[in-house]
Image (cartoon, rainbow, N blue to C red):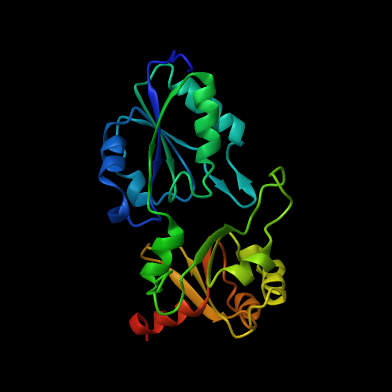
Length: 250
């Protein structure tokens, strides 16, 4: 048991995918009463506007090619703010524990003796497809769904995702942060047994007013990305459930 030696507590709060209506009631309450909020780049402006106007707001966001604060510095910042502030919120897009480094930050803070509480958020891997009319599960079409990151840490426990095994073992695949690596991922999915005509949808800025989608197949999607200059951040959904999008979107 680590002895707590700080005035405040750090709340790792999931902001959800972007639509402020999807923020949890508990998350909203903490933002309204926070003394300090350290937030990520993918948190929508509408949710930033909910923050207590008297709170100190710090952007620690990470985006491809533009790193505001290294992870170690972010954790140290949280620790130092908890020394003199009662409510310190670490606001992360989606859910803190779904490809959000929340586990790393929690472990480091607990090791330092800082009190930590987790407030889950709706993850974009479920919400973005839903807003596009795509159910990630459907009892007549799939009995499994795999959530996987397309952007791996270089220091992780193994060198890379086994995409061929995922292709063989899951009927629906949801890829986070994978747009830039699709030219590497798709050939492995095909080698694992997926067919070239398997539907894929890319959903950018899911649940926000400017949400955009690009729909194709494993055979066509790379060319479509180049033609349309489709950019991250986006979720990729692969599988027959993508075809349900046509029920809501003509």
